[in-house]
Length: 312
Image (cartoon, rainbow, N blue to C red; front, side, top):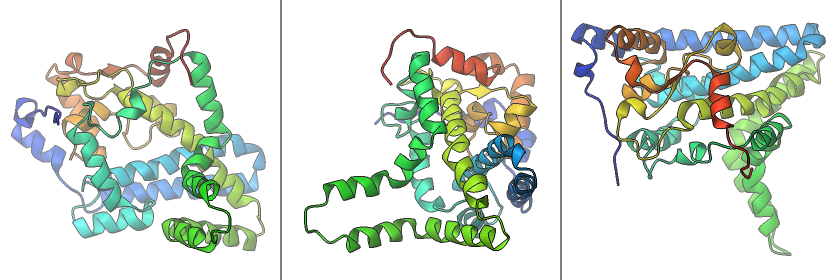
């Protein structure tokens, strides 16, 4: 197997800068988690009081749901907290869970970034595509089809394959074991909204953002990070793309510095809040022209939809 090339940090960062970049914090990661949930909570209150704001609120909450996934990603690198036990516990109980299994999978992506063995290569390999194909993908995201397939596709396949007379209970019991935490969390959320007098609240202010906007911005993030990056790329400065994000893009598409993805692949154990500083240091040292970068998300989407015909 071809392991992706690595940089030597000493070639790009002075020792004192490297020490600052890689320093763990006992509060910054927890503060970002608190910020994420505070934004979700405030947006939820606004949506309950003024339902006319729901289109914007759905985008805000969906982007912060992505934010929780980004912070879980930081925890998978052991970067969310200086104490490894707190790091994993915070990710497990406050960011969606599954950090141990995700870490095992995700580190393979870094080990083989853009090589044939990269488990995430499937996310970037189909590009470029036609605009019609991209519109179909967006439609599937915004209508909840992508979410339903991810959440219930395994159960649906097992039910379709079930032989006549085969008992249903073992299948459902296994599915509950697999998704029990998700079912319990959402059951409690439904009960809480209903008790507060807003029985529609969970559906409109948690499920819809998760099933629609979250899916779309996750797709956009995946595209921006690796689409049109060459397979088997030998240069570690070009294994991923950094996409410059303005304030609106940071609020609705790329929270918590996820747009600095080239820097993340170069120095994967640097906490997310230190990535902008890494970017500035690389710019100061004249490294940016060698890196894979883009001026914005619209420019990336334009580049990946620059073919006339391709299947969905």
